[in-house]
Image (cartoon, helix red, strand yellow):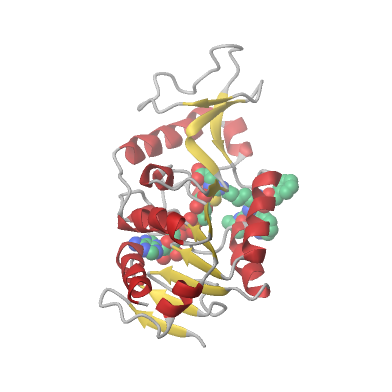
Length: 254
Ligand code: BV8
């Protein structure tokens, strides 16, 4: 039974508290919409542009090879912006879920590190992390929270090679081990929350489909419909920071 319920006043779909209370293995997939209320711009919304570039034009190995300085200016700008952002109630609820369910895994497409800041540890960062750099020569990974970066583009202290953001760009394969863990988790979960993603970027967008094929209940939380909305069991329209705390209240009531 599908149910599109408006939120903010949050009339949740009936029996959703019961579904949450009886869930044994839960997976949460998040996208930029979860961080939107922390002040992190989303990718495809109205604020999805930077100097008239779209993410698909800058987050590619070709763009980096062609103009590493431009790509690094974008990432340095984003790091500067994200550095001042804090986890919002949506991040905090998802962090709290980790202790609540017998099995729990957060799979995030976000690279902002806010889920870890909120306390999640059982998590996969499908697309990497903007606070980690990688040497293009040696492959070594370096945590770096310097804002702004003292040198653009940054270079490896050891070999002088160009450093790149340790994120997965369009056209680059996801880490096979990370992806295998995500596939295993969605195949065995009995409940999957899909929160704040436009569900267009693959292979992340296929994870809820795989979960559905393995008989999981899929609940989507978004401020607008997505290509996934017609496929899920419940599509709740509302802001993640409002809907998620209400979901937890419904769970506690059960
Ligand atoms: C790969 C890191 C293969 C960088 C990102 C089919 C199969 C396989 C690949 C493809 C395929 N079709 C196309 C492809 C290629 C491509 C792709 O998917 N393109 C898209 C554009 C069609 N995929 C790839 O290239 C992937 N690689 O498949 O490799 C391969 C195999 C072998 C050898 C070589 C290659 C790699 C994809 C990863 C790209 N990297 N990010 C960086 O961030 O700098 S993707 C980028 O998009 C971010 O990670 C972001 O998380 C992700 C998804 O976007 P969303 O998170 O959903 O954000 P968006 O703005 O779109 O939407 C926000 C949503 O939130 C909206 O729905 C909005 O309504 C909602 N919202 C807003 N506010 C709120 C809210 N919801 C709730 N509450 C709110 N308050």
